[in-house]
Length: 361
Image 1 (spheres, rainbow, N blue to C red):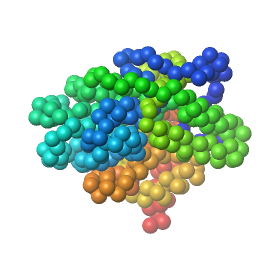
Image 2: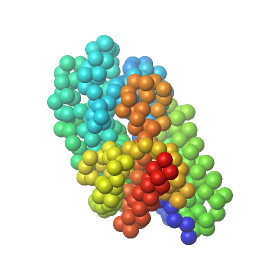
Image 3: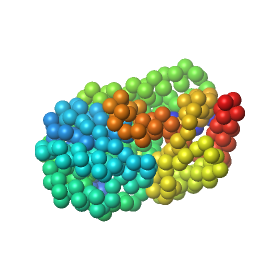
């Protein structure tokens, strides 16, 4: 029996559910949300509404946030962040003052850290009526919204939070005029195959299986990025998510995040990005020098720490915080797959690995 921590979710196929839902996608709303294949598809649906305008994105934005706008010929510009991962509001206002046409403004609360206050958002809305507000809630989806301000659109990746093969959400306070979506299930079926292969690997230890599922996971999103048409969530993923106890997931993640935070609190080599374990817990993100060495050593021990943002040169040149975060951040797994005992083991190995690297220096 192989034990690994982090990386993509494994899954065991629900054969009965698979038979009942084969080839089906969801066309209705749930809690007011349009149910889509991924967070990327949610952004594609918004970008499609405003093709060939400009989108303002935080400089700390991964491809999944950038590509949807490029697919619909939106120009993309980046605004800067402060040390606490809030928006550099002066920089944003300067950028807005130079635009007279429609601006798509995407913002997010990085790991629960507030991007902009209600007062700031209301100021932009009052003084720049050409702005379309888009909030990405992927990092704090299962927690209460911090802002009272309601954007035109809210997007999130649901599949980041549990072992569903697909899943994105879009709340459209400004109704979509284009509601044509793809019902292709190929992405979901391919990811589900890789998830089941990972579960198989944990039982067999067959390295060839591991090589194959890692190849699939690393390439499957290409199916989304090359197709402009937003896709719907599969019925299989929807029924799994609907049957999930989200309070239990939130409680387990909080417990695990608290263990990591407390155990690493005395390590002077670590800086925490997440300031509050009651607002996010997608991962426990830390900043540390020698990140690449530490990550490789942890991976050799079966502990996979997430790197979220491969940035392009323009993003890194635009914002020092984005550049520093890309170079130094590790996302420590804290999700519901792991017990408290697992978390103590993970943190012990992280501390040991950090000490080994700095002792060598």
